[in-house]
Image (cartoon, rainbow, N blue to C red; front, side):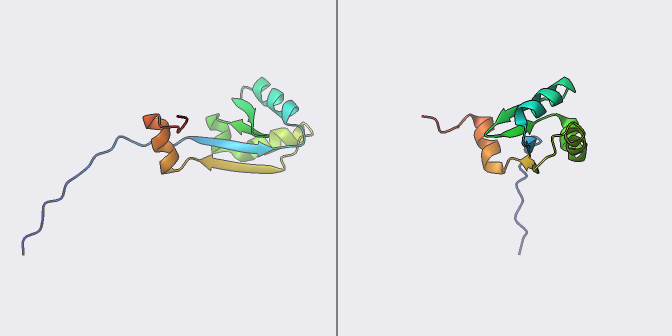
Length: 97
């Protein structure tokens, strides 16, 4: 029996969105402090969203910085979007029709 030829599908490198999500008792103060320290941080859905690569690679540094300012993190979570959300973001299908 002959082996069937295989089709090779080449995809561009996938670039999944990553962000560090942090909750503190003082999110407003925390976001101001992190922005002052040159981290890209905003408040969304009641938590800090930090998209700075330094924070994503070393979330413990964010925890340390916040604790030193009297804003200990109650929760730290590294979010990576899944394939479905990646696809919707890339093709622009947000579903807001």
